[in-house]
Length: 243
Image (cartoon, rainbow, N blue to C red; front, top):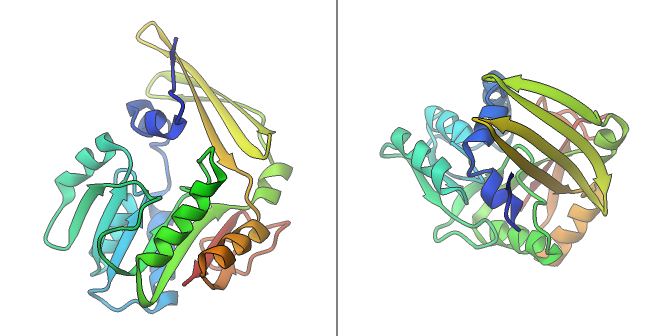
């Protein structure tokens, strides 16, 4: 059986099956969110944005069409290799570890679609917040789009069968040791695969502690892509604006 390595995100996000499983993501919703977010932050055309943990670049590409200078950065070499076909004078992609401060400064750094809280070492979460903080220009903004742990716990779908491109993905979800865990089992070309996604069950209070330790200031928290106020019981997302 093919199984992920110690850093599950390094193997899973670099796997073609990750992109097959999530191929039905809502691009219209993603575009709407980027419009709302850039308008709220009052980012002028030509502003420099880092899309941190960009995957294959869907948010990066859309932000670029809005007139921004964008760098998409991700740990997955295969995702960045794919995204590079879309590069132009104001859109670039690079392999990058988000625990490390980027080489240049940005008007905004976006970490979107629950691309945080993967690390086994708690210190790496704080390192990432510090890296974002240190990568901002004066008056720049960091944005983390995370899930609302309380909402997820109350609405957890424990078992799911999802068929995509003829592949039957058997998905099991549960909470364990302070993580939201998703086990993904499937067979393809007579070979069995097993991957696990793990996201730290971080609350608003946890993020506030990170921000304090990183010398960052929380400016606003939202509960969905329409930028409605965050409610710990009913909001599906936890969207944090800080600098």
